[in-house]
Image (cartoon, rainbow, N blue to C red; front, side, top):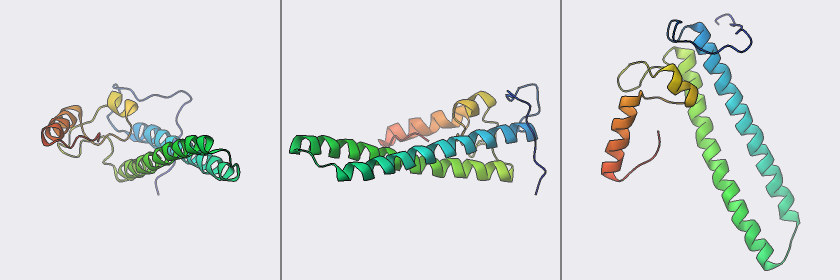
Length: 143
């Protein structure tokens, strides 16, 4: 196991540093872990809210509104589950040293792109090609 890296308070990866040096990897590991924890907490709140609402029975209109809200909550939870899977994959890439490099080209994804979307797996050019291909095939989904 590698020794833990302590990041200075307020540390942000810099282009002046070697790309995906241990400091960069630790920064993104912490960012991904924090994001994952926030999603877990939000999911637990959702589950708690849904359980509480089951007990309150109102008129039909109120029940219909609640069912619509619950459906939205469940779709959100499903998105969180998929997002958590992508976060877990990103954390595995941090651990194996492939994080920050395009899965298609092997090129650097770039610090700015990773800070905006830490689960990115493609560099910008590869992402644009992927999106164009999906649009042409009528299967557009963000990656």
